Length: 292
Ligand SMILES: CCCCCCC/C=C/C(=O)SCCNC(=O)CCNC(=O)[C@H](O)C(C)(C)COP(=O)(O)OP(=O)(O)OC[C@H]1O[C@@H](n2cnc3c(N)ncnc32)[C@H](O)[C@@H]1OP(=O)(O)O
Ligand SMILES: NC(=O)C1=CN([C@@H]2O[C@H](COP(=O)(O)OP(=O)(O)OC[C@H]3O[C@@H](n4cnc5c(N)ncnc54)[C@H](OP(=O)(O)O)[C@@H]3O)[C@@H](O)[C@H]2O)C=CC1
Figure 1: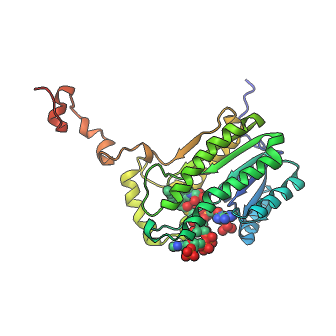
Figure 2: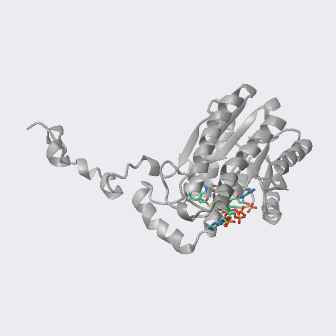
């Protein structure tokens, strides 16, 4: 039949792909996936030593990579960094806007500076990266951008600054997709729920431990995601398999956002509230008004 999967070995050969936050967690895992598929990965983050450690791992596995230390919130730094990458590599085929994070805190305890630091990290920084990559390479040659969101579809106590930034990033994803489609650039996003990653090391052990039973109650698949489950979706959106998908996002949340939470998960998974349910009995079962 001649069918060949794009995820076949070497399917990203000849492509230069920037992964921000490539020195740890989901970024590191994505970098491994892409390098194993033949891409030249440009690892980007603030701490050079973290990037060097991941670069050594990739090279040990036979992968190709380079690295750039920059704070994505620094406009001039981002411009110069993207300029150096284009000068060295010729063009940029893909950007994974993964760098980000926050500190958990109730809204009343967040200072203006703290709020702005989180918005700058999760929204402005991603904007600066995407804009520069577009202006300096993708506008001329096309490409694919994948932005990082989070499971922020409702209020999430302690994460108000981050949730606001991620929802901003969703609209930025859609707007960039529309404005840049004419240049052959696709812009999509992934929205994970909680992921077992190095990122969780920055949270207190007690908080992470408390999360597990909570997630079992709220997440239909009853666990946290793995880094590879997120990087798989990122690679799909970067690849030609998704060539007619733009302005879209993929939730990687084990079904959490589909769960209305009206009934406890253990009840709904067995459809217990509706066993033996007949429409005529609705007023009796649900307690609402109805015809006698
Ligand atoms: C909405 C749904 C979200 C779902 C999330 C699901 C789970 C997500 C998990 C993850 O994201 S894992 C990744 C975790 N990794 C990180 O968070 C690392 C990156 N984070 C950071 O670098 C910081 O948190 C930062 C604030 C985003 C940036 O740090 P920066 O070095 O620029 O800030 P500072 O100069 O240190 O501080 C600026 C400002 O912010 C206040 N602040 C910083 N940390 C805290 C804290 N722990 N508690 C309270 N306030 C904090 C800091 O105090 C500064 O403000 P002022 O005090 O000077 O007013
Ligand atoms: N783990 C989870 O449960 C979830 C994570 N996410 C998001 O996924 C992304 C990856 O998270 P994860 O791998 O778990 O966490 P990590 O903390 O391991 O990764 C975050 C990366 O972002 C980099 N980074 C942070 N701020 C900046 C900055 N200003 N400039 C450049 N690089 C920066 C860090 O590198 P350095 O320290 O070198 O700057 C780090 O490598 C983040 O955006 C995170 O918020 C979303 C939903 C859930």
